[in-house]
Image 1 (cartoon, rainbow, N blue to C red):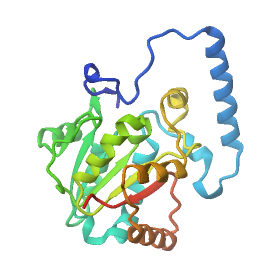
Image 2 (image 1 turned 90 degrees about the horizontal axis):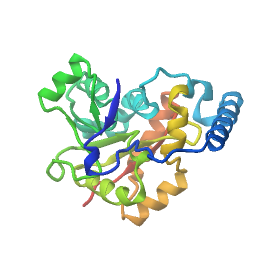
Image 3 (image 1 turned 180 degrees about the vertical axis):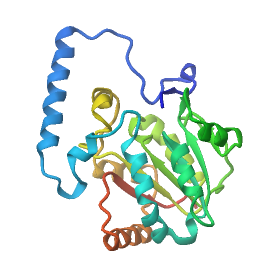
Amino acid sequence: MSRRPVNPSRGSGLFSSSKSKSSPVLSVGLIVLGGLFLVFYLHKGSGGSGSRLESVNRVEGEYLCTDEVQRAIPILQKAYGDNLHKVLHVGPDTCYVVSKLLKEEETEAWGVEPYDIEDADSNCKALIRRGIVRVADIKFPLPYRPKSFSLVIVSDALDFLSPRYLNKTLPDLARVSGDGIVIFTVFLGGIVCVFEFFSMLASAKMRSSSWWVKFFQQINLEENEAATKKFEQASKQGSYVPRCQIFHLKSLS
């Protein structure tokens, strides 16, 4: 599914690219560096974050952490219980996540797609027509009232925002959630797919767990420790090993 940033005239999109031309030497250097980086992760042991080969061996157009949200739904259900009954997902391929959530019993779901969808399938178009999925630039306030949703889940969206926009976007996500926010962000080695490797290398902000924790503290968003513990316990019981960093935050009081 091809995409382009929403309303490019209002500012740079999540995957904005420079209009200046790179020199041939710089381009070759980036290719060599990227190749070495990719080979390193392909041959590195799996460790706690899952197989590196599995992380890069993906169909073009899929997103690592949005796919991870779908894998994590049973674990989220155990961790959040009734708080998972009214969910907003924010991120690319949200139609797929919303469709999966809607199949769960007693679960209502909505989605925000941060890109203009140029070749959406019939199911996604139907969700948009019904107002269940919106296409919106998340750098601007979302068109929802405070605490409109019990839980907000974000994936593959915040990694491409600078702190300038994160300062506004994250509090707004907390504003529309009543019982918390779950954020899925990429690991340094969690490349989306081989075809998108170089664009990811240029545009994504591969941030460490400590960077995110410090940033959450700076904007006064607190960790949801109870949800974190329940999620970890459910993950252990279900032998679930995340391929992305997952953070559980409290909503704004």
